[in-house]
Length: 134
Image 1: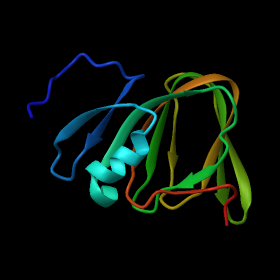
Image 2 (image 1 turned 90 degrees about the vertical axis):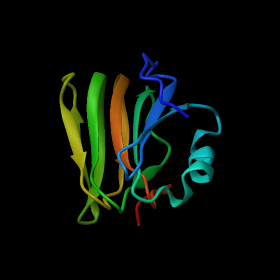
Image 3 (image 1 turned 45 degrees about the horizontal axis):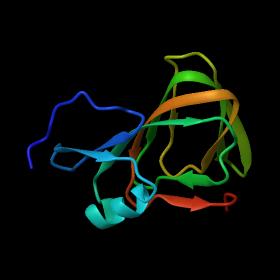
Image 4 (image 1 turned 120 degrees about the vertical axis):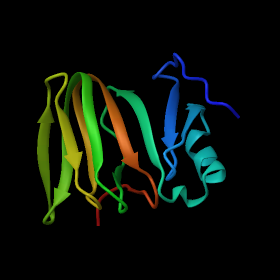
């Protein structure tokens, strides 16, 4: 299938970059993450680029063992919480255009102070989610 260059709506679509560098534009559906597992087995070497808007604290923590995650603030104000050395480390992200780099394999979550929109560039292979970091 030939990639249509766009424009695409960043709120309703994401981009998956394959290890070869090829891009796949993918609609954000209710079953988006389950579809990723089916369409891109193990997500090995792939990177997910998506815009995400949230106004309440995330209900879980996540970590990405295959690489660092780049998170860019488009609008809003949030605390990005990293679990480091057995404790929470808070990184306030409140200026549009600022960003956080979440180190590989670091549990993290977000607690917004206002409705927040961020761009995530995520090495998705073997991503883990948990109610609390271990």
